[in-house]
Amino acid sequence: MTTLQNRPRTALVVIDVQNGVVADAYDREAVVANIGALVGKARAEGVPVVWVQHSDADLEVGTDSWELVPELERLPSEPLVHKSYGDSFEGTDLEDVLAAAGVGRLVVSGAQTDACIRSTIHGAFVRGYDVTLVGDAHTTEDQSAWGAPSPDKVIGHTNLYWQYQAAPGRTAGVSATADIRFAG
Image (cartoon, rainbow, N blue to C red; front, top):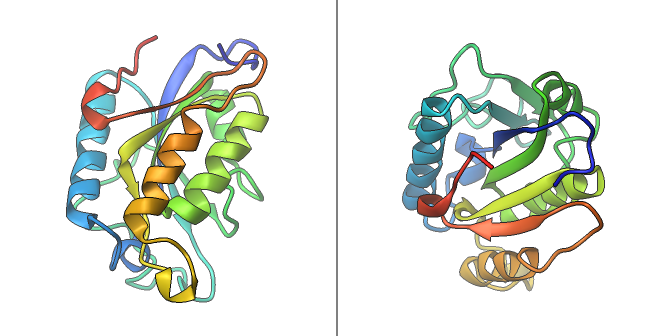
């Protein structure tokens, strides 16, 4: 269990599923559909859904690239965390949002696998959260022209190593969308 005191709840965190981030993402349609299924399941179970939205020189606030994808709808009651670093906790109010909701376990989805997803799952884990990465609900674009492995290999490797993370009093794991259980 989480090392955070009095934080028994789970939250679904949806990271950077924005037009400009996932436009050329690997398996985009399936990943966005899986995230949509997770959002629906979380809402049905009364689990908080926390949306994270990145901005930088390529994702200017208010532009179409910056907007969340149209396939996913954030409800006005669901927190929206704005960030400008890879780790969704850095320079944001994410910790405050999660603490106010009594959240100590995160179920993480979104983009990009090799940037903001990795930064955030590690950031959460070292801060004391239990972290489940949804293995078929995160994606990245092809960076192989710059020497990176193909997107399927980046995603596969991230899923592989995250399932073996360990630390005192915390859990890490990877589950498929169909296997996610928000309770417990």
